[in-house]
Length: 187
Image: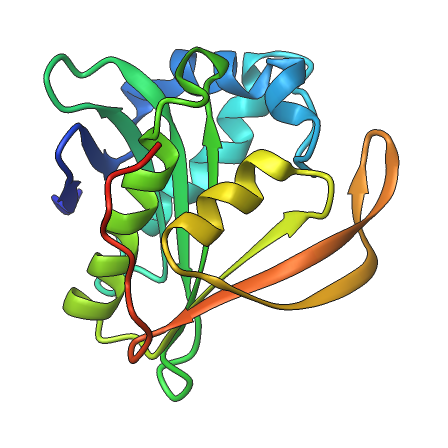
């Protein structure tokens, strides 16, 4: 497996491994983290295993197009959550991010810090032009995270997210390589 790490002041993002299965399953099993997620709560650990198997296989490719990172505290490797970064076609130089943070780490600035690190990785190491994110319009926590790093709301997709609560509208956010990246460390 390739070694890809993104280090920030308080976090370390590293490619997921099979040894992370229990932590990922616990995260996916939380009703609070499922509220705005389309994956759903797994019935058992085997379902989680089936979800992460292609993520881990992707990391074995010569050119990774779908990064899935564990977010952990830099000082003690405590699990914080997951971060995904899907790279589109080379011609468009575009990537899309998603993240899922354990409830124990909500409202502590970890998602914002990790997103800043991934944006820097995307623009500086991968030479992308545009990084996008989508988020349910009711997901105020994610909206704050996206806006704190300088992402701009591009639009709204009507009823495109099949959530447990029903169909939800989705905001589309983006940041361009030429945009100002907000680097202040506010939570």
